[in-house]
Amino acid sequence: MSFIELSLICLVAMLGPLLAGPRRWHLPLVLGELLAGVVLGRSLLGWVHADNETLKFLADIGFALMMFVSGTHVPVRDRTIRAAIGKGALRVVVTAVVAVLIGTAVALLFGSANAPLYAVLMASSSAALVLPIIESLRFKGPSVLELTAQVALADVAAIVALPLAIDPSHAGPKALGALAVAASAAVLWWLLRRADATGGRQRFHTFSENRKFALELRVQLTILFALAGVALFFNVSIMLAGFAFGLAVSAVGEPRRLARQLFARNDGFLGAG
Image (cartoon, rainbow, N blue to C red):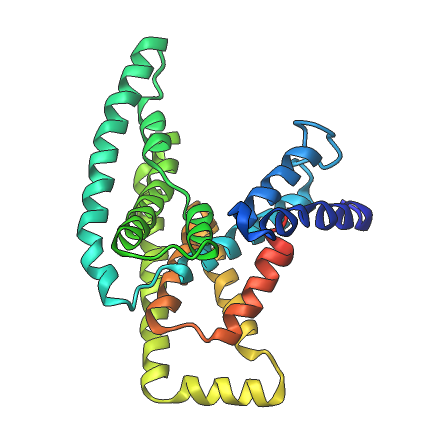
């Protein structure tokens, strides 16, 4: 990985804003970024190699940050989404049952032993893809909230289930690892809520804003990377760490200034390639 390659990635990733710019097209920002990856990767030009260690590490940071931002997009504090969780969960269950049946049929048809893997892949969703599209296109209404709940639940379930389906022999330790990440996120939520209730969070925000220190951004990134480290220690996906922390922040309320800063780092750089 060189600065030339990095600048090339950033340059081609501008295809995202260019395609999403005209409102009449109704195209999501992520579409152009995906096309840029296809063009630069092994599918076409082969200029950027996914097995590069530096690129891998940047991709891991990007995945963690992308899932964190996706988690903050879930309106946890909105009472209407709490009512939508039931329907969203029912859709997830129905989808999972259908996925198990189709996955089993595909495995039997081709003589494969990977039925659980097929089922997880078919039942999974992508909050990192769907939620930004919903926000960028400004979709509203009860059906959108139900879809948001469904996507969030399906994403968490898939992130936890996928490693178990790939390596069933280590299902126990990985399940405990997922619980450790979830428990850590719950503790972080409690600490953030406590700081918010006592006024400490607002004082911290005011001090950071007045002095232009960007302390909230520094703290959030530090916590995110620490939680990602916990996930890797337990051989759990860093995407779970990012999404869980994003939900914790959303449950307390994310300052708009911090949201803009995180958006710039995620969509403007780390999530661009």
